[in-house]
Amino acid sequence: MKVLVHLSWFFKQQKKQYLFGIAMLVFVSLLQLLPPKIIGIIVDDITLGELTAGGLTRWLVILGAAGIFMYVGRFYWRMMIFGSSVLLSRTMREKLFNHFTRMSPSFYQKRRVGDLMAHATNDINAVQQTAGMGVLTLVDSISTGGLVILTMAITINWKLTLIALIPLPFMIFMTGYYGRLLRNRFRVAQEVFSNLNDKTQESISGIKVIKTFGQQQEDIEDFTNLSTDVVDKNMRVAKIDALFDPTITGIFAISYILSFYFGTKFIIAGDMSIGDMVAFSTYLGLLVWPMLAFGFLFNIVERGNASYSRIMELLSIDPEIKDLPGAIDNRPEGDLYFDIEEFKFPDDERPALHNVHFTLQRGETMGIVGKTGSGKTAILKLLLREFEGYKGSIVYGGNPINQYKQQRLRESIGYVPQDHFLFSTTLAENIAFTNPKIATESIYEAARLAHIHDDILGFTEGYDTVVGERGVSLSGGQKQRVSIARALIMKPELLILDDSLSAVDAKTEEAILASLKQTRTGETTIITSHRLSAIQHAHKIIVLDEGTIVEAGTHEELIAIDGKYKEMYDLQQLEVLVEQGGEG
Image (tube, rainbow, N blue to C red):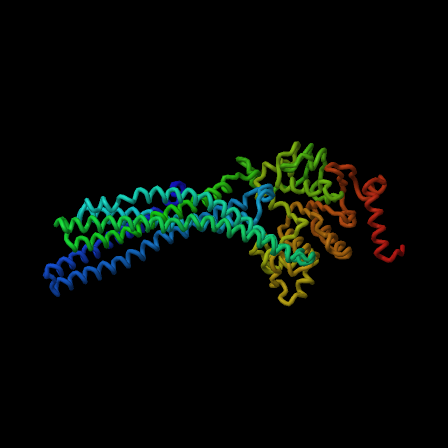
């Protein structure tokens, strides 16, 4: 029953709804006691020849009224209890989603999307069942069962009642044992479902790659194996689940046998009437449901307990990046000082950066070049404060970046990543993502600066074109330019282009860079690129190799050094020459 204790915070919030629902449930339980007693009275009246038309009519009216009141009571307890459980699922889902949005990137490096989705769907549904059906079965088994037993003992025969209850302790022991088995097996079943969920999400996202390499059959086999594992683990749960009903009904069969055997003796001895025996057997029938509900309660609560613990494990993880007490609530602006002695990514022994020092004056453009894995993206992630734990400092606008609120820091930075993520909505809404209420003309202006405006006008639906999940209907170059427009609409103090022009042709790249240079006067820009043409105009360029700066200067200064930068430049010039057919 631990999960019900853990959910006490919610029960307190919904105290009125639950109390009213429970009151209606107890009210219905009381009304259920009338029919067996009335049936017993009518049977005795028939046996004694004392039943009259008026008397029968009176009892039937009472039964009809009880039925109507039970109908109304059942409606309201369902509305109150089940309605509140739906609210719990919404609350838990919002808690999880808010928690996900606050988590640092390292959290998502360690956990799979499919697993997180399983927590937000299957696990929350199991907790909802606990707050709905679980509360119902708990209250109903106690109220109905207790009232029926008391009525049997007080109004009919207490000795026969005790005899009928002899097998029940064994039932309580067995259902408790089944419940413990069920909790462990259900947790395993939820975990393998997470694996299946993750596989499905990954396969759908990577369907183009799967088809390109002709791996459809292999992927189907992997999915089938995981699906089979889910079925196997759920069958293990079902085998325990299937034991509850036969155990409870079998034990009640023993209660019926004992009741009829000793009840017959009591009738012969004159301690009970036939009507009392009919009423007693009817009450015993009413007791079947509370005992079955008791079994269901173990089933539901143990499932909810397993799922709630999985959810709370996630919620207990604190974000690695937090706002400091009294953090600055203003957007940073000004010069940027980057002074890092050493930085390692989590769980990585090799430093991603070491001895990286540079100053970027406000309004300047800096280019960062280097081979893959040289540390370009690591610099950007530290500027965005996605990671901490480095030796050194990063000062922006006169303050270390960790002294700003994360929201204000990121509002000041327009970041265009290598992996362009577009949402499954219209182009206009994708561009206006950071400010959905912005004027349409501002959306057009940002698109013009990114040189995607004409492309969009060429689509049948124009800016109302729905791009599909992750921008699947656009080319790589179009996705890059939409992402640039989305960053520009923020009017950022610092614009970061992380190799964001790789998929556009040289002419378009030149046009975009010229637009940025013309419109971003007095604002800072950082561009990382493998293509040197994207950073030749920069005020300063740094060349990275194995996480440290090996060369720095302007394009002309680096060419004159005749080092790594000059080597890359000559190689790219040769590639251009080859593409042009070898003509100088």
